[in-house]
Image (cartoon, rainbow over all chains, first blue to last red; front, top):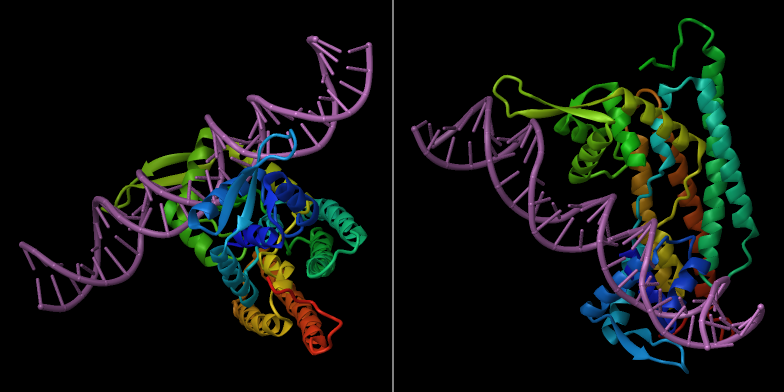
Length: 183
Length: 183
DNA sequence: TAGTCGTCAGTCAATATTGACTATTCAGGA
DNA sequence: TCCTGAATAGTCAATATTGACTGACGACTA
């Protein structure tokens, strides 16, 4: 329910129409979520059926009609519930990059090392980008700091992994210690 | 494509039928992925259409007929490509728990602190569980170590966040520094 | 006064994912 | 023999997600 929580959290700060919502998510919340536009509309309709929000047709000047979304009392209660659930629980995270690592034996150590060097460069670019993000107000800043802390830990860990493969590559000359297979 | 990579990686080590595959994923690879059974079958069919694997009906003794999956030459090539892509790129991770944090202003600091204490306990249990997992062979061990490193970093970070809210709570008595709102 | 570029607002068909279910065989007991 | 529970193998309807598309308006321009 993180996506519902996110939408409720935004809408309770201010009633909004779809485009505003989408802009805000893309611009300020891309770190937390990757909610796409059609998914957002899908969830908004679902939440309307649940009675958590209402939709009102509006028109400003001559612009096309807009649908304004705002949370109901029910919605606010749901928001509080979802927020408490989210804060109190730990949500296990999985790393897409681990799948490749799990099968790294399939390639010679020196090639893995080379590929991980590319990964490391991408990671470093991400760290730099995260550090360059301007200061945000309120709790969002915590999320940014989380991201930076995490990326730095990733970088340190990746270095130990690369050491591992560098050592394996060094040993690859010796006939007794193999980390490879020929599928 | 991590899921495809995962399935190819397993099947190229040994041809398997569905149940074996599923058992292995649940037992040994739950750290990397949360691939569910119907998704696995869906992907296996798709990969068959792509020509990456073949399906063969087999029967052992009197047991129900089984469908054995094995990778083709095409499949092996695809595996190598996906593996290289996975290893060389960095895959941005998002944390479900951050959404709640982003809206933590909606609750009084002392309640956030209380909720985060629960989160911390769950996280600590996870660290303990990860440390207790028996030693695995090969590269899977790397993934386990990644998990432990990550969880420990999370724990440290969560402590700083809790300090933040503890300080905010301490200041809540003073009339000039508010971090709350009354929705 | 029609063309077309960028912004705004939303939809739709296709794809991906999953909870809940079906069905077969075996082992053991009643 | 019939019944029950566990292991085996897989399907299906419902839900969730997304890439690609539609269309309306305002400003500029030629």
